[in-house]
Structure formats: C-alpha cells, structure tokens
Length: 294
View (tube, rainbow, N blue to C red):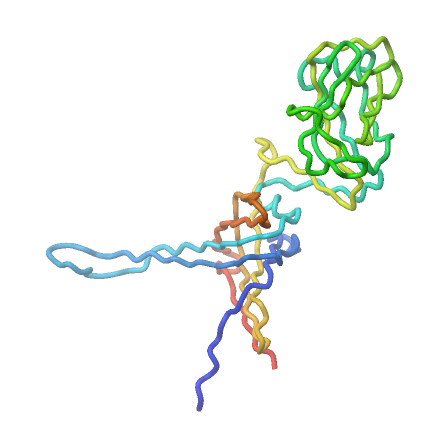
C-alpha cells in the first residue's frame, strides 16, 4: 500500500479561552501573529569517573509553555492576563464627562465657593477624548489644560494656547449658580451657590468621552482585587486547502502580564507567555484533535 499523506499544521486561525468551571468561552482571539505550545523536556545524565560520556540518561521535568502573539485587545484579555475585569460602557449618544475631583487643595471643587460639576450642555459633537486639569488662576477664574491633541479636531477644532497644554485663550470666570463654557470643547462648569472664592493654584481633574458606540475602563494593579484566573484554551489551526484541521485543548492555563506596545506606524502586538499544567480531573495537560474531512 502507498504511504499516507503527511499530517501538517498550517497557520493559526483562533484561540478561544474558556472558564474551567462552567466551560463558557470568554471570547475569541482571531487577530494573531502566531500561537505555539512549546514542550521542552529535561534530560538528567549520570556522569562520573573518567568517562567523557553519560553512563545513563533519564527523562526529567517537562515545561509546557503557551505563547500567544495577540494583535487585538478584547475586554477579557485584561481579566485573564492583568487580573481585572473591565467595565464596559454602552453607546453614549451625548458623550460623557466624568466627575470632577480636587487634586491639589480643596477650593476648586466646592458646592458653595467653587465649581460643583462639569456639564456636557454645550455641543456634544465638540466633546474630545482625554483628561482635563483645571487650575485656579484667581479667586473667580480658572485655566484648563488638556492631556493630548490626538482628538483635538473633533467637532469644532480646539487648540493649545501654551506649551503647558492650556486650551483656554483667556481665563474662565466662574459665577455663582451660573455656567461657564470651555469654548470649542462642548463643556461647561457649574458655579457654586455662594460667593465664588477659590484659592490660586489649586487644581482639579476630570475625564471626558466623546459621543461613542462603546467604551471601556479598567484600573490595573489594585492590591485588593487583582486575581489571575486559571482558564482553558482551544487553539485552532488555519483550515488547510484539503480541509484538514488541527486543534489543541489546553486544559489548565495561567498567564500573568500583558505587554501594551505603542510603536510608530504599527499595530500593537503583545506576546503573552502562559503555562499549561496538569488537570487531575481529565488526567492530562492538553488534548489534540485532528480531522481530515471528506
């Protein structure tokens, strides 16, 4: 009889992590630069005497490392690899201005003598994504600074007024119970209920999202709620021209860390290293399935 066609693996199609308790999938990774399961074994040699060669060789530990080259960042990668589930926001037809909070001093945000809130009562289309810093210029006026000009052209163009990233050409006057607009940015400050009297050089900060179809926030590195769950993962090869497919089911996987690269004129790629280890229930580390459809 003739020899069988060699079995081959071509490309990578997807990696689908799943919850080991429920079996439910976290999602799917398809924008991949590669995926590999490296099995490196240890050989233990018996050496001694004048022999330049081993008297015996036995097999030792085997290290099973899963490597993923990821070029997309769905919410679940932050949960699995950085230990924190993100907060996903639905569409915001009017954008969003986060709560403003004092950063230096306590006079900038004050219910009576400072500003009470940031309002999106301007033109929503002018809202620009970023972090804002408010600094008291005098007892009744403020300057505003903006973290980046990446989104500055959204809606009405904004522009920096100084190298310190100030965005208002003239100081903004806060009035009792009134609103003061930040020109071109779709935002206004609401003044306190009493006589305005802030302390010069005090600061406050807030963040803004423009009109959006979705958004996400996550805080990484908490000493209280960072947990890195074990998970399973289905690694699927690309389907070959002859329809052959190759699948690995890694039964217990754990990874800690997610590189977040920003390179010039390049899509970000994160290389994630994970360990695969023994599942006593299934008495295996991973399973392989192949199929050659007819």
